[in-house]
Amino acid sequence: MTYPQPPTVIVQAGRSVVLAYVLLVLLGWLGVHRMYLGKWITGITLAVLFGVGTATAAILIGWIPLIIWGLVMVWDLVTLPLQVTAFNARERNRAVRQYQRGW
Image (cartoon, rainbow, N blue to C red; front, top):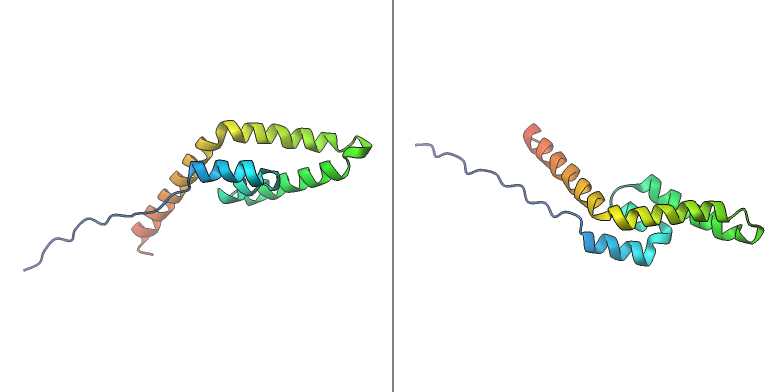
């Protein structure tokens, strides 16, 4: 006698909005909040913008990268919950596809 298999439940912890905001506030100048969400290139870009901007702010040209950096930080303050939700959805879909392929 064969018994039907129970349904498989995929449990995957997603990224936290609270932790993303903590990273934004404490280490946002390094772009760590972006790296936490898998956006390594934009995270490194934020760190470079901040570094170049602060290094050259005395000769006034550094204000351009700092203004760009500031605009991105304001954008992230507003859209961070959406970014976390999108990341979690992508990861969930990836896990489901892996399960359906049979690893």
